[in-house]
Length: 243
Image (cartoon, rainbow, N blue to C red; front, side, top):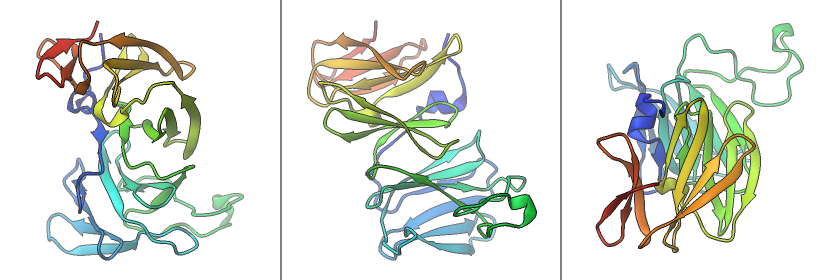
């Protein structure tokens, strides 16, 4: 039986559709909002509505970016911002008990080496090969899987802050329209294809393509049925369970 965490039920997918994306922390204290015209993130105190911090959306060389999406990761007590124009993703911690975040090379922060990122919402940079604006999170938000080009899928670990797998497939999966779940302790992902009438299954144990399921028509998206089964919403309007 798959894990029925709130993140899994909500289906932690994200897309680049929102022009000025925002998200609210699970404790209700913070709102993180993008101002893509100014290329900044605004950390807003939800109680007062005041801006507690303006964070320039830029890499270490000063190149700026729009924000494609902001996702709230409740199990990590953080936000994740996907950047549209830079090969980075950012995790911004709102947990007051989180360890210091050092933006650079640090030998031992306990000895005072390096400079911790200032808060609130310090930024952890996740280094990518290419901008990843669309994709799918695991239910615990430890991983996200995203399309890096036709037939190319990257797996990103938020724990180690980098791409951990670069997968290839002859088809063209659309992770942002998929589902993720855990069943009997095993993490699984399912993605519809962008063109073909099939769904691709990815197993996290070894990060391997498990199999592909043939459909009668291309799928617009995957979703959960009321009886807790994964299903595909087809381009024809029909919804069919995945088998």
